[in-house]
Amino acid sequence: MSVKEQEYTDTLTIPEPQEELPHPMEQYLRMERLPHIWCSSCGIGTVITAFISGLQKSKLDRDKVSVVSGIGCSGRAAGYLRLDSFHSTHGRAIPFATGLALGNPELKVVVISGDGDLVAIGGNHLIHTARRNINMTIICINNFNYAMTGGQAGPTTPIEANASTAPYGCYEYPFNLPFLAESSGAVYVARWTALHIRRLTDSIAEALQKPGFSFIEVICPCTTLYARRNRLGDGLDLMRFYHDNAIIKHGADTRQLDIEFQKRLVVGKFVDKDKPTFLEKRDQFLRDKLGDQFIPYRGPSNGR
Ligand SMILES: Cc1ncc(C[n+]2csc(CCOP(=O)(O)OP(=O)(O)O)c2C)c(N)n1
Ligand code: SF4
Ligand SMILES: [Mg+2]
Image (cartoon, rainbow, N blue to C red; front, top):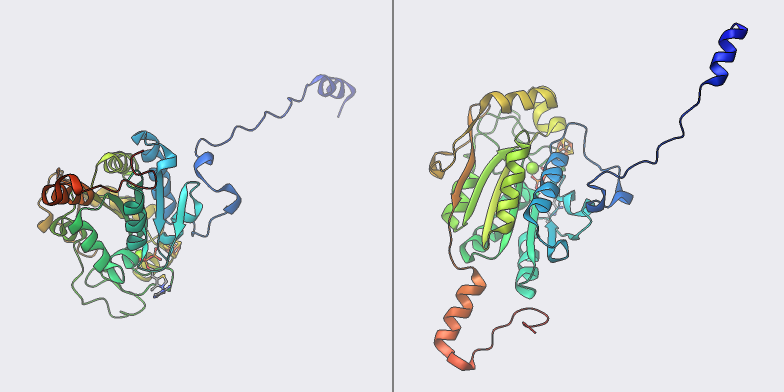
C-alpha cells in the first residue's frame, strides 16, 4: 500500500456496530430453545410463522391463548412458542386441550400437531371434540406420513405414495380431512399449503376469533422422508408443485376434497358457520331444565 493509500485508509471511519434489533417474532418464541430440531426446508417452521402472525392479527390477548401439541416433528410446535404452551403425549393433545377449554372458558385453546397425532392415534378425540363443538382451533400439519418415527404410512398417505411401511406404495384409502372435520361438526374448515403463507395467516386469525371448533389443514413438505422417498425433489420443488397444482376454491363441497398422489389439490375456506358451542349449549340446556337452580361454571373466577 502506498503512503497516499495508507493516509486515505487511516481517514476512513469505521461505523460503530448498530444495535441489533430484535426480530419482531422473538417475543413469541422461546429463543433459548433455538436452534429448532426441524430439517432445513421442512414446512413446520412456516406454519409457526403463520400462527404467530395470525395470532397478532386476531388481536387476542396472548395471556388468554394456550397452545397444545402432541408428539411428532409437528408436535414440537408448542415447545417453541412463548405462550402457555404444552407438549402433551402422542394422540392426546386434543383431550388435554379440552380440559383447558372446559376448565377455563376464557381461554382460546389451539392445538398444533401432525396428521398422525391428530387423525390416527388421536382420531377419536378429533371427531368427538368437533361433534361437541368445543371452543378450540386445530392446526393439522399434514405431511402425509409419521415423520418423526421414520416415515411410516398414516391415515393421510395418498394411494401410490411410498412410505417406510409401504415400500411398493400405499394402498389404503386416506382420509379427506376437511370432509372428516365438517361431517363431525366443525364450524370452520380450511385447507392451505405451506406456500400459502398469507392466506393461512388470515385463516388462522379468523379461526382464532371464531367461537367453536375450527379446523385448518396445512399441507406441508417433509423433505427428509416423504419427499425423498417419493423422489419429489427439495423444498423449492415442493413449493413449485404447490404453486402449480393448488387450486383455490372457497366454499368447495368438502366431499370433493380427496387428495390423490401428486395430483391437483383444492385449497381454500370451505366451511364458516355459526352454532352454539359446547358450553353455550350446555348452559342453555341446563338453564331450561333447572331454572334458577342452575349456576353455570365460568372458569376459575366463575364470572366474578
Ligand atoms: C403412544 C405412542 N405411540 C407411538 C409413539 C411413536 N410416535 C411418535 S411421533 C409418531 C408419529 C408422528 O406423526 P405425525 O403426528 O404425523 O407428526 P410428524 O412427525 O409427521 O410431524 C409416533 C407414531 C409415541 N410416541 N407414543
Ligand atoms: S423429518 Fe420431515 S417433518 Fe420432520 S423435521 Fe424433517 S422434514 Fe420436517
Ligand atoms: Mg405427519
